[in-house]
Length: 453
Image 1 (cartoon, rainbow, N blue to C red):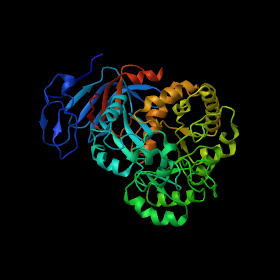
Image 2 (cartoon, rainbow, N blue to C red; image 1 turned 90 degrees about the horizontal axis):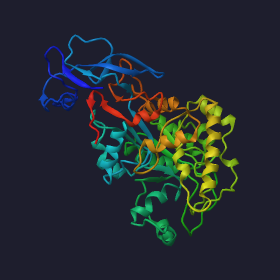
Image 3 (cartoon, rainbow, N blue to C red; image 1 turned 90 degrees about the vertical axis):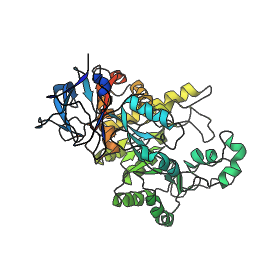
């Protein structure tokens, strides 16, 4: 099948960049035309011969792109026609749980991987504020991907994500136990990658500073969270328990007043319940995703599974509250040693049971890779391998639920009049197999064609 751009009634073929900038002929390569520029009102594009996804299947028709938005009615003026040649058209993809795009290291490679994959909406759930500040201006344009940053995670003193950031900031990349005393005393990434909050007074004092980083979402950490956590001691590598449960509703209240959503890292079924009952709407893990792993990295496939099993009562509350879950199925494979196969099997058994409980109570899932340097396909492959979702359901999850969860105030995830003119044109029908998403012929965001690297 061929895809071509042709002028309409003698006009030149243009796709839009936002005024008052100069509009570039970004589709010229498709038609064999030279790159050119024009100044003036945004052009109007007729997009013909596409099979447009409607959430269930595909229907033929023509859309018009005007001011970066899809229109059904033909405008009085059409500047050019984009012929999709019968290809299958779906909304772009999203990654709702990542730690990529945090600073300049590896930035171009990961950004290009997202564009190539068709993922145009990304949510970074914990990052260094300083790193994001350096690269954030590169995103958010109509011709680039859109990124939301949490700008540091809220936790208790020395709890995760302290060990994920502090040793690296010190130049320590292995054998943490040998440097434990130095690491525990260091605070290079405090109020940058993590915020230590142990009381309501801490929260009140630090909230203005948190807000001053201009986060797009608030990330909190619960790790077997209890109101009176035991002393983690003065020696050894710290691990901690995350926030006190009583702080969660207050954080959610403050975030809501600021127009911000809250995502919670959870590890146990009790953490899941604390987050749901505290008003959190995004759960950034499934309980038991690292079942059997001790803080020192050792694994035990005989550990009890009950602490990670979500009850019907909590699942029902989650469904009623509209909670969304990034299950991070791909994380279940993180294990090493002779018992690794057994512990992975147990984690996936837990995952299947919890997914069944949540789905039975109306809880929805979204795609989140949660692996540095990896993108959405890393998680999608793991979700498919778990064997609990049909490909058609996974398609809706990736193109509808996930982008809307990242930017709930925007008209994303559908191909309807009034929605953003952002879409992927595929060579094959993705409702038959999600593998069709690996064969993208065209990527358009708000009327701008994105070139895949």
